[in-house]
Length: 432
Image 1 (cartoon, rainbow, N blue to C red):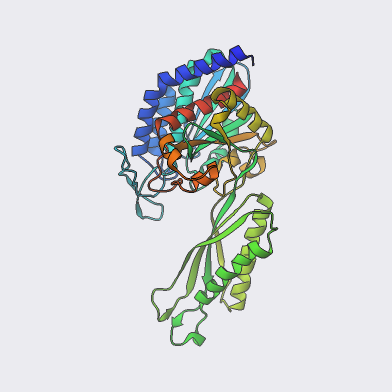
Image 2: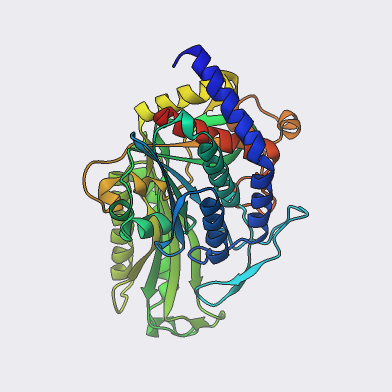
């Protein structure tokens, strides 16, 4: 693209963002006030679908549950898919915002919980609608098909697979490139990119160890599942230290261990929930297999009356950004924002279900993998960023609230505007 064309595109995008920003900010505040649990995003998805229909998009609701797909066909050219997520978390909001959430909901297990958009999915959805508005206003500047995905249930790694299983790439165009973004507590107005290994695979595994309970004074007449569980917890730590190559990063965490009701009762069972994270899908499967092997062996050693029970609560694969596509998008962002507004994103142990959309095997769709790029927009206002100790992005972020905190709030004006611009520029990099 010639310099004059870049200037024209930047001016055109900036002007249209200015034109739609007030409406997008209002939408963001509305979404923030009405968070909904995974696969319960009925009001959120309806509000987003209405907004996209008003902009002239061909909208389909209830894809994969509460998912929304919106298409804008604008002549010949590639299909670019933009994805935003919608679901919230069972957290009591403590931001003090005038439009803070006071909502509650009932979980699938029947518990009433407070609700909060503590991960910024309301921001992501609002940026998606803002991008849709800007792209509709700039139809003379691009050619191809824009495909927008409002995805449910990212927090439980269920929404992407549900939309794919509901025929996402059969009912709608198969994209040539998939773009997504997430907020992070970096400096607002900046964008982080990373090629190849970017976010971790994750498995949350529930385990029940079976015993034979009885009176605490007569342990020889019981089979104690608590002792077996204790051995499991300590033995699992040897997987990382003795089975994983030192250059690899793997985390095994026992986040839940529950057994018994009082001191003098040996229970019939012990329940564990284990979180596994890694950056290599094959290694990840190996670690999960090792966990199951160790638990079975400890149960055999402890004389368990029957084998342990395993249930995968949820899981996702590692996120690997296509390096050529990252370079392409990063160049477009650099031309629009300037190099000083870009940073090298460190690899994250956090996880996403976004990579299912591009991975043919894991996503369950035919053909080759689809290249994808997932970048990160900063969410910390400049005044606070300047006060935080550290010289690098990673050092400063260690001192800031992270997503899933009751105090986390990424929805400042600079971040919202940057999110709209980054996604618009990313789409135009392929459609212009």
